[in-house]
Image 1 (tube, rainbow, N blue to C red):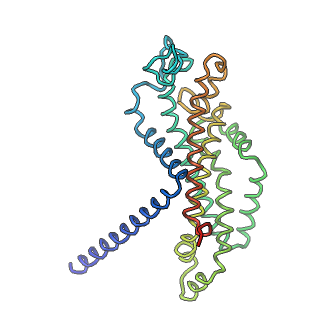
Image 2: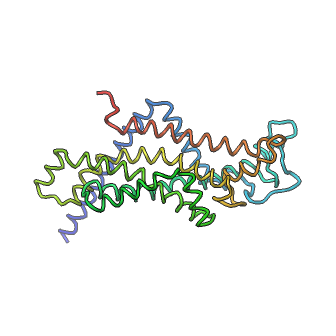
Image 3: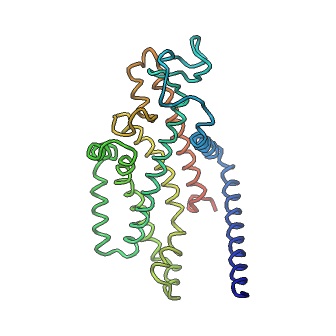
Length: 308
């Protein structure tokens, strides 16, 4: 019983230390972020989008998939013939545009985060293994990655979606099938550079295994580059999803997706400009905010960019 109590006390003590360090690192990150107004603004905007997507049912009472034809193509509320109940107007089926944009944020953020998350996991694992061990496996994976890089991302995604068919799961598969390559190349190059440094040699001398060296010694020193690239690629994935939905190969109606909403308003650009413009502006603001936050994250996390 005494041993169990001692182990329990040790566990809670170590947990408190880790939480304290995490809190201190978070406070330091926020302090540095405050010194970069554009990055801070981008982070606030992204957080607002995330909260709006999570609490969408509490923000609006309209149904994103059902409309009222008596209210079709109503202009935004600030125009003379607008209706205050539809702040950004309605589409060709009388559905509230603001509601569909808020629910569309769920799709865009989910696609961006899932596709990047899976790409990070695959690319980091393959890059770490090939960059550290090299050999035949490295040659095979590197040649396959170079083959994928020969195809433009959007054209490649269009081909995969045409083969798999539209749908959320197929969309994630199409984006990650090539999305891992950038993370693979980054981690592989960083791994090849780090494995020759003195701290890695010291870890070998004290008898640490290769697995421990990769996971505990090298990856913590290069993971900041992966985070920065992942943030920037999230915006790219969101744009690609919107492009595929615009072409009819992504998320299918009546599910609200910004790309398909822009496509649906093409026939009304001259008379009802808001149908395409409003979701397009929402997409522009989100991607711009992600890129601003990603640039600030790079300045904060990359020690090579800090002025000594």
